[in-house]
Image (cartoon, rainbow, N blue to C red; front, side, top):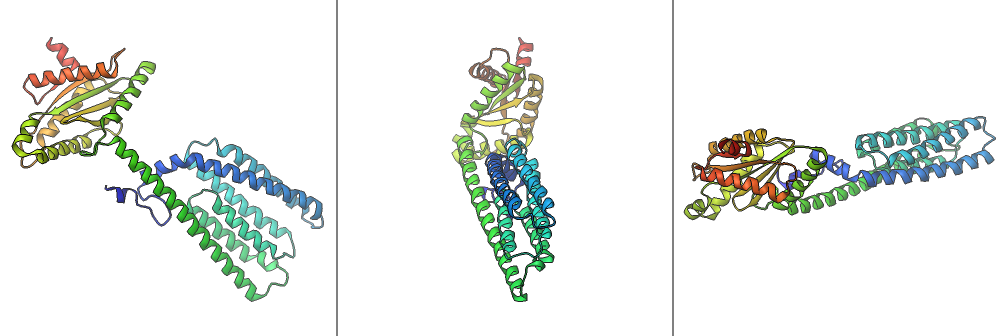
Length: 374
């Protein structure tokens, strides 16, 4: 998949590629939770002001107690949202939380309007404020759309009819104004989400460039060094096993001399593609340099690594690289042992690779097989 398709954004302001969208959501969780927390705090504070104001001036309504209680409930929920939002670790749970809070705002506003009779034009202003609040919260666009539309429909079905002196033409004008507001909110949130994802895509591409080999598209030596150091630390602390496979292309210099460097590059690319299809998602496959490649196999002992290397050798032998035939590779397989360093582990794999070369090429030599020969 090329980068343009990989980072394509839908009309809902989300990456079409679900794996990329998931990466983005995880990356943005911290900032989104912060926005939600402080938005809830502001809403809770505003509800407190309404609560105080209602206590002073709204005791005339027969449903005064109902209004006070629901405003107190919204204040409590806002405080809970403020506290919980910053602690959520999974984006799915975060979406549930925001959706619940948006629904609370809708229920609160419609309920309060049913308690007053008659209503003033300020209720229309309140509708627009609640709509804006729904779109301020960083929910999925489609969910915010559904909730804001439900709010609008509920408002125009009943509460608006209680506005004193409302003319028919004014009723339709208010509907038009609300539609304009919804269009504005949707365009604004789409543009915001679009730009945030474009920035994320640009940063991801830069990150890829820093850790990917430009010829083959697999990881480079820098990425491999970082990961092997991490796994050495994990093995030292928790005893997690891991192995590495170092291999190179047999007779690569002869290929370059006979067919040219472009042909040699195509062989390296073909081998990288072949191996990439045969390894696990958790494996780290990198170009070590020139015609040398290296694989880091997490949670894999030397016997399992040797079996994998043998399968890789067969895959390479069975794939033709026109116009070159009989492409083979030699493999050295080493497992991490206590007190190994990055350099010592790579040296072991390199010696085993040289042994494979000396034994006739197109073969796998591991620590186990080398020890057995001795």
